[in-house]
Image 1: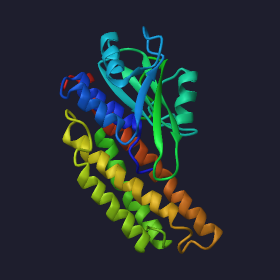
Image 2 (image 1 turned 135 degrees about the horizontal axis):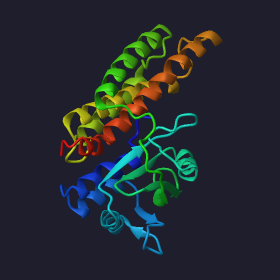
Image 3 (image 1 turned 45 degrees about the vertical axis):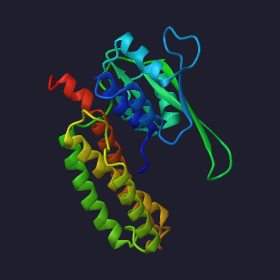
Amino acid sequence: MHSEPRSGRLAAWGNALLAGLVSPDDAVLAIVGGDAVHRVEGLPGEPVPVGLSLALGRLRALGVTGLRVALPTPGHPLGLSGPPEFNARALEAGEAVVGHGVALGLVPQVHEAGPEGDVHVEVVWHCLPVREAPPADVPSLGEAERELAEALRDATEVLTRLDVAGSGPVAAAAIEAYRARAEREREALAPGYPPRAVRVLELAERVGLLVSLAYGNGHGGAVSASEMAARTHALRPVERTARRARVAAYNAYVEERERGVR
């Protein structure tokens, strides 16, 4: 839950590249991250898969002016607008990038090989047509920030009562690892994003970490079926709120363009 989605990196750094704020090499380096290579398949005018730098240039030439993120789950097509084929592929992957300005979207397919600790990861982004319509259920940054604060307060209260709020040495180590990673990756979003988007994304990451710890710590004090059901009931809306906030943060660049802020 709290790991950074590949679609988020592609949208954030793709937006920075489209705006001329970073070089193609820097954008590709940030998008690929720890993976071995990323390619894009099915781009109009490109009969074979191409590298990210060429793909982003081709998207810009086709008229794409921005990139949005979708993080759908079963029953919640967050950030999607159709058609059904694209939605189904995005739901299977758990994420997608949707172009603004041209009705095209990208869905990642991840290929892993090698032993644990030395995994070789290749990502193929499949380019598909999308429907030109508002993305589903994406809040504004202000709404996302308010919802996160409320969800975090309510969930912490319930989880603390059930003794599964993320305590003990394992949880402490995970929180410390998250803080260390946050320090190393100080720039949570690419250049060009508003400070509020960065703040919302960081809070969404912390909320996601809380949820992951709560699920990963076993039953904690929730020994009865009713208490376990209460934990699940408390976590489900928090997960949903954190995902909506992440999408709002990643999509803030395009939303500001639409409002004429840029």
